[in-house]
Length: 239
Image 1 (tube, rainbow, N blue to C red):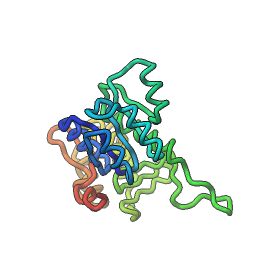
Image 2: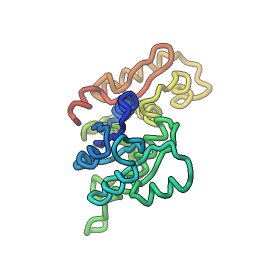
Image 3: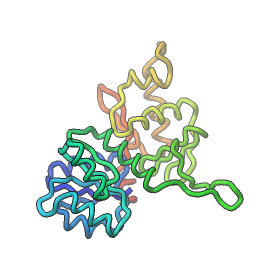
């Protein structure tokens, strides 16, 4: 998605942009409420911090909602129930109270997107179109993984994986962007009683990188493990 990040702190905005980019999102950053109102055109999602220098975040919500149905998640330090209720009444779809984790942020964005964008209707024949979005279909950048059918696509192209390769990919995708420890991956993909060489994991990672078409899909973290990332070239093509 193309996310409009409304945040007046440049340091926070940089960190958030990097984190969202790791999950395959293109980020446009503005630092004021006035800019947010004008820049929201074309955005798929708005992540809005309340502490802006020109307009109160609630007013920004109201102005955005008056002209657009774009999903809005508000980031706030206000934990009072009344404040949260007012935010939702102003047009926010959800909110996050500081401090929060990147995993929680991504989960909220995905949940709000599912609710607000909805699901395609069935076709005239009673079936569903090929591009129906389902709750169990996982996407990460140009990567699509269907756990139900065990199908994988990259940029719309089918990728044939072995059972172990698919299980390894889904294990990495379960916490995409975060580092998964080698021992945890072996326990999850193979078995907690696995006594073989850990070299097996490296071989499967190498094969998976090759089949996904770019070695940067899976980054090595020396002495720790691996993490799933969207390759830089993919960012460039999506932006």
